[in-house]
Length: 391
Image 1 (cartoon, rainbow, N blue to C red):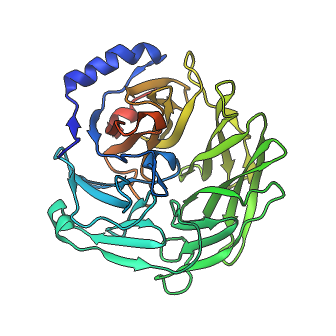
Image 2: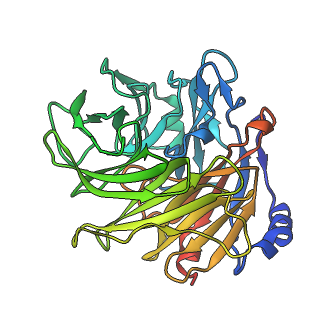
């Protein structure tokens, strides 16, 4: 496949050896390979995949891994859908999804869903060959919600919330349409940049960002199952003029939500990342704590949460490298030196890759506008057992 370069073990070793002095603890062995990606940082009204930090572009079922790549090489923007079987090469499905923004990838009930632009392309599969031979079923809606569905198939449009009834933990209507599910409101304008959703079997949660009088507010909402989103957390982070919700993760073992935040004053003088925990059982919030790696600058591109062996880690795109940091010990491990401004993506455990799977899949996508069109993007596979053995 054109533009595909498999990195050999020797090359990976060279990368890690050259870069491991940047990591305070050590490095993690992984399988990594270059993958196709968006050709333009912005083209025909669509940004590249890496701009949308809260997307789910990859999912795994056994040996099969699926990913969506926003193809914006022409004015006819689409999402190309790829499958990888074990160590085999990535193969593109003959039918691309006519979705003009970065699409989300879900596996629900043994069916692959590619969702965006109020469209759901669903592919049945039992094997890679079966997937490639099947024509997708296409479901569309005329609702006017945002074009950016989130990890539990929720559309946000300036405070109006639309959800796909068959996918959320609370069922409504017939499971075949998008339906309005109330609105989110805040004294701190949190309706203008609602970013990411997460869910579990008990709750549907939404993490939103608002800006008021020079201060970012990050707000966690829970859906009441009928028409309202109730605020659980409204937490300010001062000193920054721009903030994004990088991740929302639900820890089923402790009944806690982990919120990952990136902030910047749009210069190099103040770039910070934060992590906060909301405990559902006690209805208490830890407050936001800085996420840092000693000796490394704080120009974080993105963060995602990973669990292995009951341990939680944050995968961090930072200063051209990707690290893994243990929440329990604070130790950090270098995964690799991949690209400028690396944005890190992984699957949601409730709608993508189960945490019982043997591997964790990451997409490392460049968010450096100046690097296009020659930007490099990578697929990385981590052994979950190896992660579980880390401190």
